[in-house]
Length: 550
Image 1 (cartoon, rainbow, N blue to C red):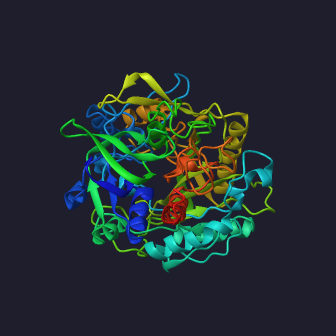
Image 2 (image 1 turned 90 degrees about the horizontal axis):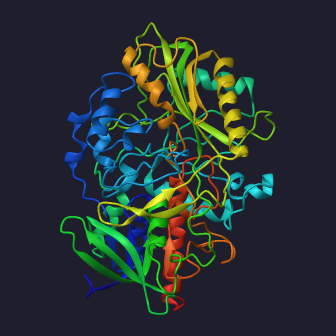
Image 3 (image 1 turned 180 degrees about the vertical axis):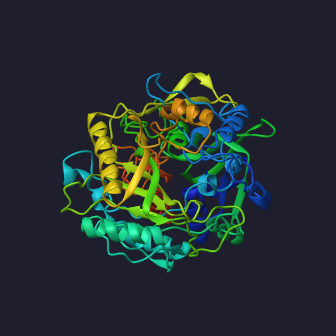
């Protein structure tokens, strides 16, 4: 490997890495992609794995995964044994947190990363997210606006062929949709009732991609088809290498997961897209005489301003509808459950309950007898402000299976977040009850509140006991799986790690393309914004490379 110098090196093959490989190869560059995990095959999507859980809490599936080495991954709110091979082994990949501040780091190491296990919902952010300081006086403004990202949003959506509708929602811009997205009859009733009662609250369908029958993400397939992409799997990157002067990256040092051999990959350009916590960990571990506190850390902000979105979860039923229905919008997949559902974006400006949160859920999609009320489930996501002491550092006392220092993750809510989370929960309770729904429980990092018959009333007593006992370990920070920050972009090298085009101020031939670049947490999923920013950053990097500026 040390004898070949590639035009570009991409670290990670998920949402950011796959689009980086596609964009760079399309520009004519030779690209080496280092992926820490294995290849995926059609056997990973065996329909035989698609079994109904033993109970609605699937406590035994989680117990088996815990015994096999996944005690953290098994706490993900919607974990199922069917997907367990798309999550890491926690024993080999440990991390630490403050004793009084648990954090769930849910991750996968395989070709495609978390693209095999995420909900496939792709939502645009707006200047409500990018310019939050201008709007609220809190947090920081991004050095990027919605207007600048809009053409890249358009491009990603057109390329992926989203399911969605033009809804005209004030706080959720319409995108480019290849197929309409449907609602169940129960969701149609729910939507009509909510919007009639609160005109500033919109209920729209998910905007999503269907499972890819080819299983390898489309951008990676296209990059491979160019003949300019080389993929090295089972490559555990431990640091980015730099030249003697320290101003340019020269490649990366990695460990072959199978043989244990340490190797060097060399490239003129580096795209770091390993996921927020992992990318920050790699930059910190890339310390050198020129970068004693980590590569890109001349500002002292590397690792700082780490965030996740505020999670809350509610289950119950909707008495105005009975039974359940299948949404036929997207083709059925033999491995994945049907996609689709409803989304309640940030409320309009005239709503007295407006807050920086939204809700993603479903009504009438869970199998239910025809004579029973339709089931409902909602997951709420709230904004977290960036705090300097919420940060990722290296824990030198503990190493992973490859003798690399593990990350220490501190992500603690402040008074602002506690107040917003209370509002987020109370508004969801009010909204559901006002239109004829009933909640059996709602919970968040603030705790579990049971109502009526309580959580999962038809489950066995032991499963219900374990659900209550372990709830705080399941619904803590990290449960939203929308982590951001740690290597934020900004206008000056004094207050940020990256410039407005995702380049390291300290080594401009490196871009960080995942959500560690985000200066704010937002309230919707991060994936579409990551993809859009990656295309923009890669094009800028290639242009600078060709004109001799990097």
